[in-house]
Figure 1 (tube, rainbow, N blue to C red):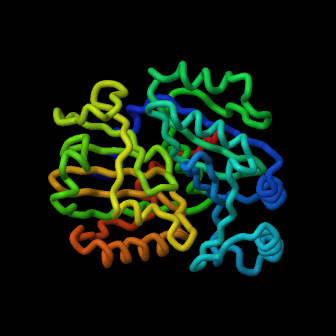
Figure 2: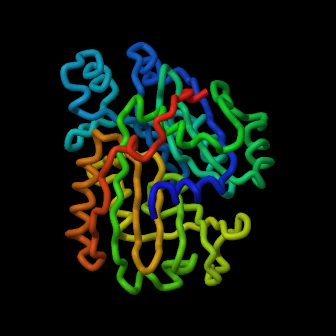
Length: 316
C-alpha cells in the first residue's frame, strides 16, 4: 500500500461529516485563550465514549500557563506524553458521537480542539446519509453540538494539510509477515487481499474497521455496505498491543490504515511528529513480544512530502 492508494480506497467513502462541539469544556476555553491546536483521540467501548487530549512534554516545557492548566486538571505524564481525559460518564453529549459511529460505513479520521471548539471529522457512504441525517435531527441532540459540514468527501488531503500546518504530521508505515494461524478464515474473515481503515479506537483492543476488498472469500458474518465494501469487528493480539492504552496512553493519530496483500500485512498511521518516537518505541516493543510476526519499519516521513503544495483553504 502507498499513500495514494489509501486515499483512493477512502474516497469510496464519498461523504464527509464534521461535528463541531462547543460545550464549555475547560480545554475549549484554554484552547481559545491560548490559540492552541490540541490533537485528540476519540475512543469507544464498555458503554462509554472517551476523548483523550495530547500535549508533548517538549512543547509544554517553559510555558507556565500550560503547565498550570495541565496540573490543575490532573494531566498524566507517560514517558513525555501529557494527556487529559474526558468521557461520556461526565459529558453525556459524547454519546451522540457513539450513535454516529454505530452507523455502517462511518469512521472517524481526525479529532482535535481548535480556537475553543471540538472538531470531529467522519467519512461514510452516501447510502447511509439518511441514517446520519436522522441522528443529527434527533430531538435529543445535546445543545452545543453543531453540524460544521455535511458534504461530499472531496477535501481530505486539504484537511490533513491544514492540520499539518498546526502540528507537523508524519506518516509511519511498517510491514509484518503474520503467522499462518493469523491468516485463517476465522481470524481473517475478509479474505487474503484487502485494505481497511479503522472506524475508531476501541477500549477493549478489538478492531472495528471498514474494508475494501474484491475477495470472493468474505465471511457471511461481515456486514456488506455496498459491493466490495464491508464492515466487521475482529481482534488481533499484536495490533491490540499497538493500539492499547499501555502505560495509560494511546498514541494520537489521524487516519489508521491497514492492508493485507501477498501475505504481507502493512500498518500506516498519520501522527504528530512529536509522538513519532513514542510510536516507534511501541513498534520496537511489539517486535520483542511478537517475534513470529517479523515486524519491519518501512517509512517514517513528513506527510507534507506526500501532499500537494497548493494553498490551504482551511477547514470551512
